[in-house]
Every structure is written in structure tokens, then in C-alpha cells.
Picture 1 (cartoon, each protein chain N blue to C red):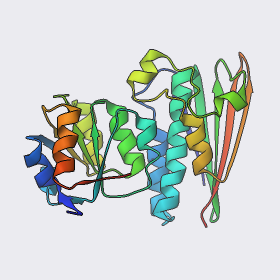
Picture 2: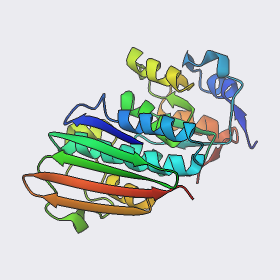
Picture 3: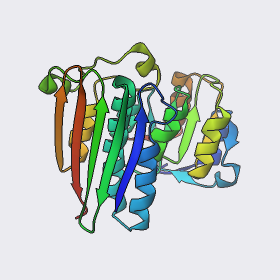
Length: 117
Length: 137
């Protein structure tokens, strides 16, 4: 599979939709997993899903600058109201999964969501 | 067009505000999205640097039809060895900065990679000035 709908990302990882519920038909063509925002800022691609355990306002800011429109927070991290406000301003989709980073990326990878590199 | 934004050392909730505003302006001016991304990634890294290391600072941006120039001036500890700071992986960031997802020694290299010209000047104990220029075509 070369593309995956966010709805499928949600189902595969038993994720909760925090914001952007109306945008689940959007598609991503690859995924990148990192807790280091400077690495996210080096990405040269669009339609990428960011998988991260770093849950703070800078995660949303980083996604805004890196043109990432969907973030999947792992390890049961809880998004704050301040983060939701900024994400909504930028028409982002935020998901929370109780699964670990390893389990999450394993599930997505084995469902043919491609890595950025 | 000229813009000015203030930065406050340690105030991470504000880091990225200037980048966000500049991004909106450049979009309105129909600058190539790929170039916008490069500009705002560099500016955002620079903002994080000021918030992470300095006491206070400002962002001064000037946009015309062909280019954007951005200056960041801060009052802070300065950078004793700029070539060392430009090396990927070298960092003096605190644990608090690392918890925010930065501080891995990628900031200055990322900035250099994303702009057409980067000049960094610093005086220890006084502060740092960063000048970045990006052409729109």
C-alpha cells in the first residue's frame, strides 16, 4: 500500500481522535517516528504521519513548520487544551494511542505504511 | 514589509510564534511552499535557540519581492566557539530543553542547511546575532 487513510491509522493503533475528526479521510503516504523535533524538521516530504511520544506545544509547532498535518501520540500521552487549540488553527489531526512506540510503528509498518527513509 | 517579534528566555510556549506569523505572511504573498518551509524551519530553530539559551531577544524580518532577511538578536551568554556550535551533534542545551524535543545539536546545522546565507556573530556574556537570507527563486 502506498497511501493510508488516517481512519485506518486510527483503527490499527486503537487510537482516540483528539481533534480533526472530520478529516479522517485524509491520506498519508509515509510515516516518521521520533521524539526529537530537530529530526522532524529535517524531513523533506509531505503527507507524512508523525508518530511521537513527545507531547507538548513544541510538537504542534514543529508539525506546523514541517507541514505535518497528522500526529499520532504514543504511550498514552495526553494532549493539552493549548495543543488542541494550536492544532485546530492549523487544521491538524491529533490521535492518541495507548500502544508503545515499538508496537505502534510495527503495526503501521506491517500494514505497508512506508517509512520516510 | 518589516516585522518585529520579541522572545523571552525560557518561555517555550511562545517559541515558534514569529515563525508561524512569518509563514502566514509568506503564504499570502504566494511564495513557493517549499521555500516557505525552509525559511520557517530555520527561523523556528533559531527561535528555539534564543528561548533555550538566552535571556531575551528579538526577531526582525524584512520581506521584499525577491527575498526575506531575518535577524535574531539576543542578550545572553553568547557562543564561545561558533565553528564548534555549527557541528552537528554539539550541544550545550539543558535537560529542560531536551525534554522539549530539542537540544541534540541540530539547530544551527539545520538553519545553515535551509537558508541561502547564514551569519552568526557572538560575544561571550553579551549575546548572539544571527542573520539569515533566503531568496524566493
